[in-house]
Amino acid sequence: MKRRSADPYRDLDVIDARAPRFNQLVIGSLSLTAFLVDWWPLYAILAVQLALGLTLGRRWCLPCLAYFELVQPIFGEGPIEDSRPPRFANMVGVVVLGAATIAHAAGATTLGWSLGLLVAALALLAAATGICVGCEVYRLGARARGIRPQPLDRIDLEELGANRSGDLVVQFTHPLCTDCRVLERRLREDGHDVVTVDVSRRPELARKYGIAVVPTALAVATDGSVSLLLAR
Image 1 (cartoon, rainbow, N blue to C red):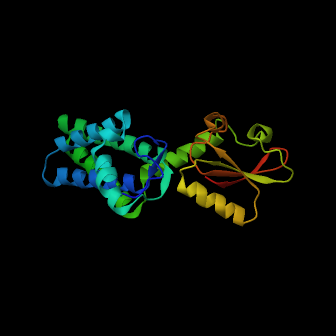
Image 2 (image 1 turned 180 degrees about the horizontal axis):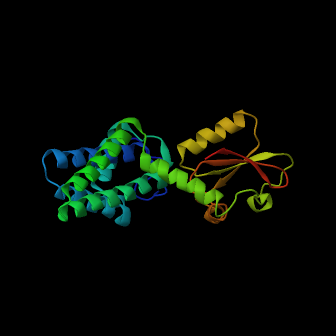
Image 3 (image 1 turned 135 degrees about the vertical axis):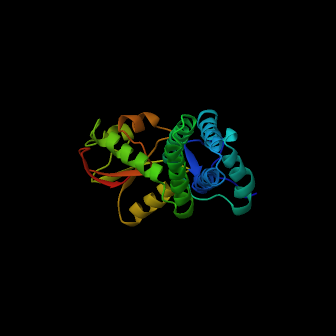
């Protein structure tokens, strides 16, 4: 098996980007199957399975195990990304599948099938195209949390150890994040002076500045004022 840069069971703040798509393929296919064979209890099973993976870890997530133990060894590791958006999407899946189960149990079959088909459609869309609606909702919420409760208009450069003259770019990053490395390389190629903040080593700074998604890059003036959000 090819060497992994991120351990799927220990490096939980990142994930192989192909793993959520595989999981969505499984969830979407089984949600559609439940409708086609007219067996709604499958929605309850899927909701419980997702909940177990979220609360007890990836070893309790059967699609995750199938991907990391069977698929990834064959095709190799994909791009590494922030695990929080797909995790949030799974939470949404638990809620909607749980609601579908409750609706069926209460006799509201039309509502139950509608919710189940909604999960199937969105999960299969994400699996086929990479467009994850739940992930995008998370990112929108992350922007709102970063802007509204805690305006990100100033950064303490001394706290970051960035005692430099001239404007620079502060990038919040993670050492295993593929998008982070790509962004940093592009910023440096464009001539920016880049200071990186590893959120795995400095989580207190991520909390302080409301960094909910990596990579996040900010143009910062010499006085610490944030002039432009370059990427998030």
